[in-house]
Image (cartoon, rainbow, N blue to C red; front, side):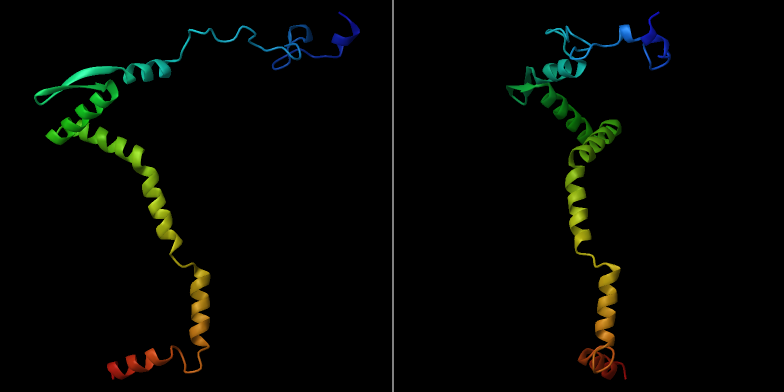
Length: 143
């Protein structure tokens, strides 16, 4: 061994200096082969292919994904509870963002505790007492 390697401890997460990746070189120099695609890409490609489907008296060409969606919806409408539950789960996954936006817009109009404090201070410092002319009318009606 040379003097450089004696002061370096080899162990977990510390490979020998001679076997480390060289600076400026990729750890996978050949890279992924051109023809190799992932499972998601293959599934997407398969769902995008067109098939011929008979609807009523005529035939139409739709993607396999559309055919699955039509079949799922039709089964749920016929009363298949498993398909209905699957459709409802997909519905919340697809449209959850719009519901969150609606909830956030409702929250934007709710006053904070600080707003209530400001209103309480304003009405308590009113020169006529607690609430002004509205309170006088309320007292007349209740008497």
